[in-house]
Image 1 (spheres, helix red, strand yellow):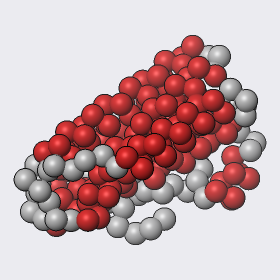
Image 2 (spheres, rainbow, N blue to C red; image 1 turned 45 degrees about the horizontal axis):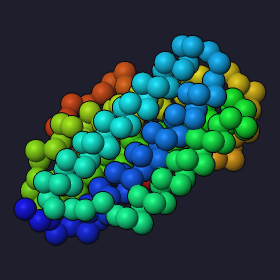
Image 3 (cartoon, rainbow, N blue to C red; image 1 turned 60 degrees about the vertical axis):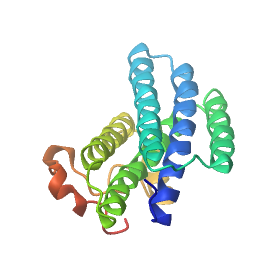
Length: 189
């Protein structure tokens, strides 16, 4: 079955490629930290990103959507550059920008859910909901790791994400069920 929703097609292709960039970045991130618990946590996040990529590809295959070769190359390079940079830019920035990135990724999956629903497809709602909440868990992990860092207020002011600001409106302590979650990410942050 082919779908006629250009925004959804573009979103799926982007998510597929961006998950690879994120996974590559986490390889370098995990390799650059010394704390064994942090290594394990970041490695788990990397594995989550690979699973998300597989899930998105499965959806794309179902609707005869091919990955974007341009996005694949672009995000491959971006992921590798970020991965390598983790070894030279210190501890704070990989954590900060990972958290900021994950914050935006939450909405990516809720928006995708709405796009599918616009064309009458609801079979992916549950998995998209799960992936969005997993991205929120990633954001919270990085947010908590940084919450007392002296650089966070400055970076939050400059880049718009931190203890007081997020790019999504999901509260893990009060998660909405799948049926009600379509209301997430309606307003730009």
